[in-house]
Length: 368
Image (cartoon, rainbow, N blue to C red; front, side):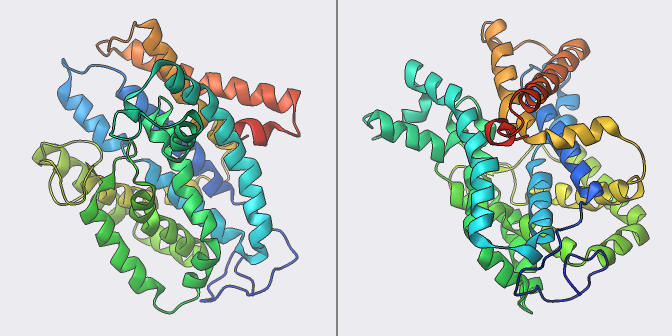
């Protein structure tokens, strides 16, 4: 039985490629649309001042921040889904064309702005004296330092691409569960590295258990869905308890970060944001599975163009900052809704136009 079959429960992964293509997983694909909406919403929330509504800001930060966990989980899930026909050279070529190339295209305006106007990215000793090519390379390796800081995710996930054969080897080992049980506490205790610094490998370690969890959930897809269906109420109760408890008892809200290992700056030793998002995963997977037969055209479209939204939405927010003369406005329902709509719809328009004008190059240019 192939690991690609819908009722696979085998402990191993086929050593040789299989002829049939992987079945499209509509429920997991839809989660991309949910994940990108949460990520855009996070960045829109931080655009505004919340001095009149600090409790609401804390609640939104706790609910939305660190939603990258969802994207990493989906990446691991879909990687495992296609592993039966895995070919390392073909896999890397596909990622180069459909992830790295649009990343480079999306980086051009941000890198140009940093080089033209100067940046805090080069304020550290030794960086300001770098040559222009070296500065460009630095911003491509650590894009969290420029205005389109969401692009930090691409160098990090590229680490997983490069070690993908090792990932598949780990998935065949009897001790893979022990590894997962070890890595989750490591991430919870280490906290999320700051993406504006040279922490790509530390970020890759932080998100590694989520990627492996996605692989594991695909490997045991039917068993995992059965557990989620059976205990959905308990997962919902656990998520609600962590969310409400953290909101009421903690003075820190949003993601837990560090610039130096084990320096938590009063945030606390437990990364409750990571715990909460782990508990959110079964809820979203369960809902996506229950609603897989519903016609959700808009969500399906957002999932299709999620990478374009991801690549471009911060440029929309950056433009809004320029229109506001770099001041941070006080939040309003209308302002937040307008910014969120623009940050989603304008990249959607770019994706639609690209697909119509250059369909053969669209995924390489804008990711969709």
